[in-house]
Image 1 (spheres, rainbow, N blue to C red):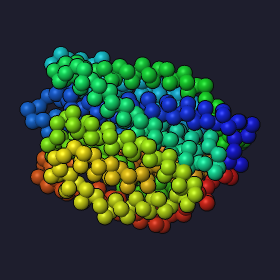
Image 2: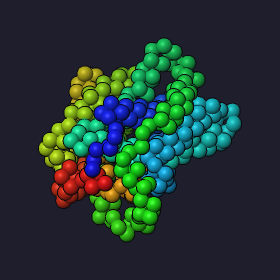
Image 3: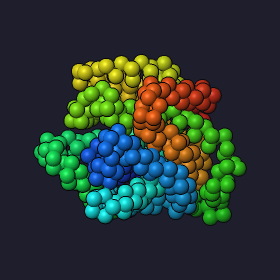
Image 4: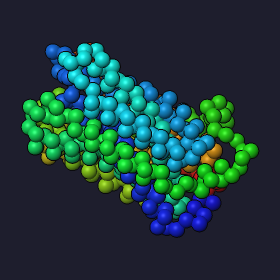
Length: 432
């Protein structure tokens, strides 16, 4: 059954909130790098051209994503065999280590090439962490929720994901207002990484106290049952794995284009100040975050597929007009409205992407099935979004080529949405 045997509604809610709080800190640490890249890039990647500095920092951001498939593979198997709780605890440990390493790393002027090398190491640790975090948290939230409200509760994965990004931006805005530009560029950018590392330590203990999902307990009780492995995933679930990869490709690229890259776009292309771009991005993300539970709840009523198809159609038709319009926008409220509208479109994917993937796989291989194809798609498309955008602008002198690239990938995902079954009515979690 989908319900947690012997678990009260209050205990279930506590587990969902506890898992979500850990997810928030995990993603705060991850996004702090992107939010403060404008300030710390000169310290680790010195260059005369500001765009080159951003390109270097974006390249390291993408490098962290290249570790996500490895993290999804290793930690997906770990979570399937040792438990969702164990996987969540391990992921927050790795994230803590990466965040604190960035906080204490000396600058390039102090230790030379060791500075970017240590930043790269930190991002590799964080990439491993996030690679396992997504699969473990999506699986845990989907399994711990009741059947009738699974879309609603699973949507809190993106609520906390966005909350982490929003908190990182809020810390940025506070530091911009209190420290001043000089202090923030000199040393203040280290503060958010210290905060993230300290919070991660507390969340580690929180996650150790979560209840385990009924789905995993049944797998654990069946000592002679099938075990999670990479080859078993390829052999027994190739169609589901390919579906996860292609449904993620356009969704994750659109999300990172409209959120992470958008902050740089507003500065580098639209001409807003760093402070204004941060405020616009934070306001749009607040709208986006609040919308996720509503979209998740809607999927419990009408199904997952219609919402993903809506994202695919609107994203394909409107991505190019959204970016070209923003090129000439100078009013911050207008920019906020446009970016918010773009993220509303992406909500058709983001709010339900985790539960859709979890519902495709049986419990013994669910975390790996969710994590690995998703991480591969993120490494190829999501994590490279900024680097590809800067490549189109600087190297090809064709910035609008990036808009067409995002449009094409959303269209490919749309084909996947149209061909797949609605997982709400064909959920394997019900059969656990």
